Image (cartoon, rainbow, N blue to C red; front, side):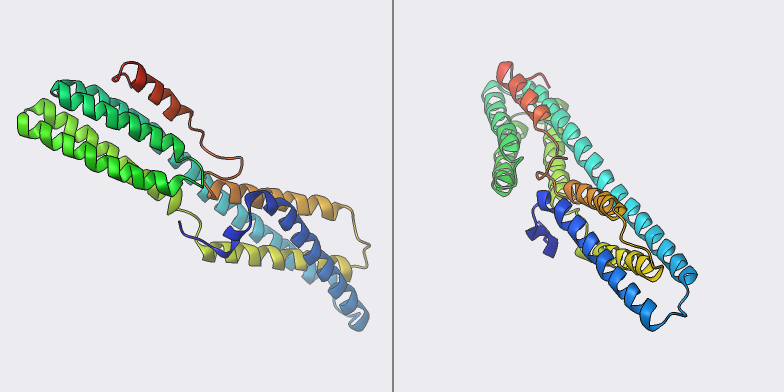
Length: 262
């Protein structure tokens, strides 16, 4: 899994940490603006106000773009799971055309594969489940080769094709879950944009001879909530916005009950 320096922070800590960072930057900007007002009374508020509006607008655009990216990845992971469930079900159905001994072994391996997928939906077990899944791919492919040796008909070819799709979807799922996260440079840019924008906002408040407003807390919570949701969506298996195992659980029950129905 590609790691960034922010990965050491748990998902639940981002909301209070980001809110605290925003409040601190606004306070620092306020004090700097108040200091500049005393030593340079000729500095006008209007240009700083325009710069503050531009910075906040740019930050809002950056947040929207980033949220759209991670939200799209979340939908892709959801659809990949649905495709994988359908592919495994199809593979199980087509295995009925194989010789009984091979069919029985294929069904046993598919049940174990689905079980490993369910167990691998937590951060602690995901890597072990991926390795186990790759081992099961080899065992399933060995059974497919036995089927090909005994019967090179179109029916066997259809089973091999469905098994190949299961393996391909495994690679796609792993890529989406572990290797398609926001790059570290994007996180660095987002943190920098947040820090500078909030600093400019506080600077304008100090320069305009305004007292500190309680609305700062609402602003801090607003930005912290959006950034926390981005982090949550970017970390599959962590936080609250995660894909549940229900589809795989239903498939496992169906494979256990009749060994064929997807």
